[in-house]
Amino acid sequence: MGRIPQVRGFATRARGTSPKHEGKELRTSVPRSGHAAFRVPELRPDPVVAVEQSNEGRIAELTPIRVGRMAASPFAFLRGSAGLMAYDLAHGTPVTGITTQLCGDAHAANFGLYGDARGKLVIDLNDFDETVPGPWEWDLKRLAVSHVLAGRGAGADEDTCRLAAADTAAAYRSTMRLLAKLPAADAWNAIADEELVSHAGAGDLEGTLERVGQKARRNTSARFAAKSTEDDTEDEPYGRRFKDAPPVLRRVDDAEAAAVVAALGEYLTTLGEDRLPLLSRYAVHDVAFRVVGTGSVGTRSYVVLLLDHHGEPLVLQVKEARESVLRQHLAAAGFTAPKVTHEGRRVVLGQRRMQVVSDELLGWTTVQGRPFQVRQFRNRKGSVDPSALAADQIDDYARMTGALLARAHSHSTDPRLIAGYCGKSEQLDLAVADFAVAYADRTEADHSALLAAIRGGRIAAEAGV
View (cartoon, rainbow, N blue to C red):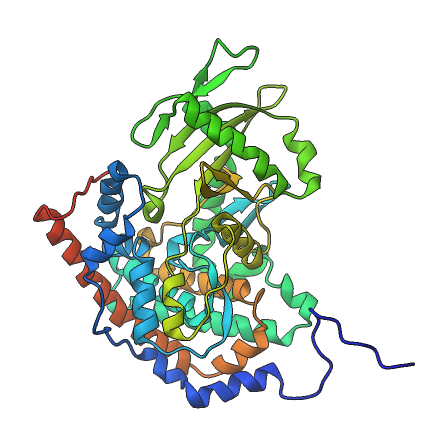
């Protein structure tokens, strides 16, 4: 038999250094203990200026809501300041140079339950607005910091918060090592959701996850439509329209609604052809503007009401996709930002690369020249509030999210490479914990600066929305 040619996209057969060995070698240039370091960059932006800059391009009347939400707690400030943390990570922390698909905003509240195509609940990362290829350490460190801040917000003692950060890294490391040992196909779908609690040693979370799951099963388009729509007698026989509920939900004028509806044609071209017969059985009935979560407040986001022939609803969310706040900081860390042709496409492809199961109706479009992502709204979504966990659950949740993050990263990076670097010892875990505590302190100071600016009238904030 003659020599079989190599095929682009497949691994080469050449013998040489294994990915695991390559990862080990990186410890020489970037010691694992070095990840404890956090040096405040000399030219670091003033935190209030950073918030103001992150509000640029958003709908001006909504930015006080965003600021008010960020002011609620240091953890909430972290949620809204992914760009500021990316600056700090790029200019004040070491990286190994290993690239993975980043969530970009991997904090403790961006994990949750959602329904797959058959209604089964899946738990995974669930927010990808900032996704971009970059250094795996950034996601891990942001997640560890978020557990320290959430733990402090829940009233946990400092030892518990530090342990949560360390065990975030430990679960990430042990999961990556497990995946590295498995055959490639087995590793791709390893750690099924029903095994996750036992794998992460998160038994104390079982009751909480069951309660969240019960609530998630009721969190559907039909339930949202029942609460947020009213009869529209001009649109028989199954006419419904959204009800005004400002400032969170408001009706839009005909021209704005028409622009959103027209954009759904482009959206359909981004779906698999097998999805099209399903959507062809729904008619568009109404469009409304709906304010979204902390980091996204002020961006343009719509809900679109679809009804089938029985009047049963399906609600789509059409959400503006802005440039990832991490993108401008990649070069400072030695990474090249990839070319992006459409920000909605970036979000969707990043999500598909990281999740085990993604929304079957996930796609993208353009509305009046702006890029948007499109997804199902309220497809049985549920989430754990990390700042409301009991002290004995904080560490369990940290381990579970650390394991989920490793699973997500392993889809775009050979787990043998990261596992080789992380190793068997606790060196990385302890270093990440030191960093997380130091950066949590920095975030608390930034949050205090924001509160002072609000009190002084420097920046407007609307609380309780």
